[in-house]
Image (cartoon, rainbow, N blue to C red):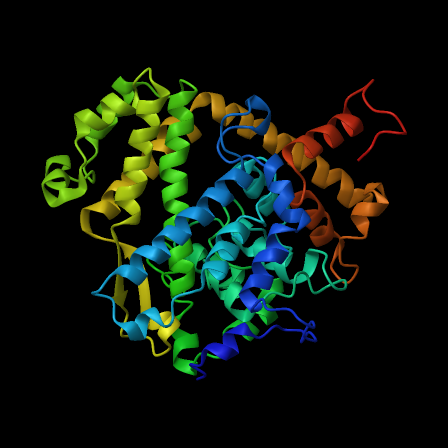
Length: 434
């Protein structure tokens, strides 16, 4: 086991140092992610609401930017916490690594959100499947352009570990699904793709055999249990950005009414006692919070959102997992006590009232139709993939994986335009820009 920090700065493909460059390895990681085409394309990918519905709500790009800012806030909180030992703080990620992981965590997600992910997974049944977080590893290590084809952005070992949210393979999770009577072809398991096994093996190399054996453990639902401390921090930032800011978008657009919020809160068995939270000094009062969230004043709503974010950021805690040896695995972070229940409530509420609403499911169905149709046609005739896009794919991969990579990289608008060009009579010309 290598428990030195230097091993985590290594890249799979060594690079010569640049003269007079004062940046460290994680500064380079952050810069490569921010300047990547995959990061820019997130501006055209659905977060919750479709990208063409307006300019106010979040896209995958703005979500990732906000996630990065929240991640930095979490770092500051833990570094300032006197109860956290200095030996643990020494293993906290740098601000650049924190930002890089938050900005990179959604790079592999396809157009049309979870609908696109589920459709691509079904299309890839028997061919390795598809999962958005697993695709992020492909983008970072194989598909994105930087130095030469096939090595992606050549990220550090630690950035790979920071985005490895589900450190179990597609085949292992699919086998677990089968024993549970679940179909991995229907909804993708939370995993990395088998095609990235060599990348994962390299990323985990500094860990002991015992740690590597324990890390892929699954819970009773077939979902990976563990992740590195860096990844746990990123996930906390992602949960805050998802649960709070998507709630803000939905309220601002009139998709959630106060009576719906209050009825759901009253029925939620896992919602923490707001009075208890208030007396603990968290400053949360259910009625006051609802008044501000659903106020006609956007200033009041913004203050309520800010208060929620502050409560969540300031109530992360560091704890130890004795089953691991390496500091990056032995130490982890999560929300403390009732605040964890509050995060779960916010995420579940947004999912049930917005993502699972009839209007959003209609758009999800459209996304399924577009992605499925494009996949079927392009597999039949891959020469229809534009030459510039073909240059981004790996010739060594099977055709189905190449088509999957191509579609996964599309924005919602690009996918819909290509669909109309291929299937809608009277739309498209030979000189259209694709």
